Amino acid sequence: MPSQVALEPAGIILAGGKSSRMGRDKALLKLKGETLLQRGQRLLSEAGCNPIVVSGQNVGGVSDIYQERGPLGGLHAGLQTLLYQHPISSKPLRVLVTPVDMPKLTVCALKRLLDVDSDNPVYYQHCALPCVLSLTPDLLRYIENCLVDHDGDRSIKRLLQSFDAKPIKTDKVEQLVNTNTPAQWHDALKEEQV
Image 1 (cartoon, rainbow, N blue to C red):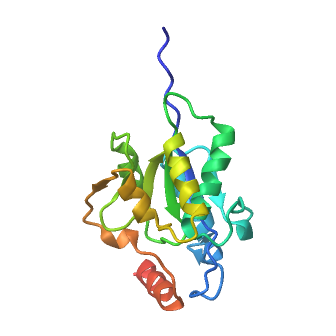
Image 2: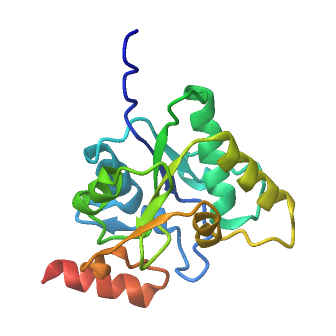
């Protein structure tokens, strides 16, 4: 019996936020000639992800099926898109999920998550994103239930806890910092110029 060919991991970039604290779309902020969205796509591609789905209607990505549900709504839309391209099989598709607003994230940090051999989700212990998930019926059912329940906990952190995610350590916590405000973005730009 022929061995099953391992699927390349897929990638999802969460870029559907309102960017209300930033005052403009974070996905379109430029760093070294690239928008944060272009940078995120490049990083995921260089980490070996194919395909890459962008969650966020404003940037030409997929729209949330459940509106106003935060990052979990964007994750759901991205996973549904991947499901059409890669129906669930005996070997679930691994999906690397990143937010669009981490200007210091590196290919090395992403590959390190992908290199962890685990059927459970994997993330850095300091923050829920980026993370690696397996596209399974249980994951989709969990997310769908959270999105339908208006009073439920729709955080990515809660999802990771529910699936016994494996936290890994890093001594480069600064790579996992989000930029949510103009001041944080200004600081990130200053550090890039040093």
